[in-house]
Image (cartoon, rainbow, N blue to C red):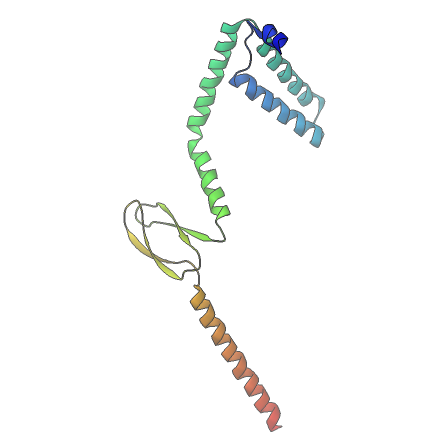
Length: 170
């Protein structure tokens, strides 16, 4: 490994831009090979690989640092301007993950999203942001379900008794 260390002395090495280009070229190569993309996309992917290798082995450290700084400035701008979208995606992912165990409601006053357990009947919710209280139904509780099941069983028994009575008379 000493030969590699000696070879890389005075060379730029890898940075954020190189890593981004490497990952992007791998993704493009993978997608092109699976979905049968055209030759141009494959050549673009290989050109990115070549650019990564060139940047890594370059001895012009100042130029490569400047390129990386320009990339990072653009990357920070993208990250700053997509915060809302990324937050929305994360929230929707959490809602999808919790869809069997929790319900989500918005506070009528401040519109804060509030998560409550499912199947607890009517619940009194206190908004953590504005402390407003509101009542929402989260689905039927176990006691309500049992009561309805009992009522259904009683109705079925009454129906069966009436049917037996009718068949017994004739």
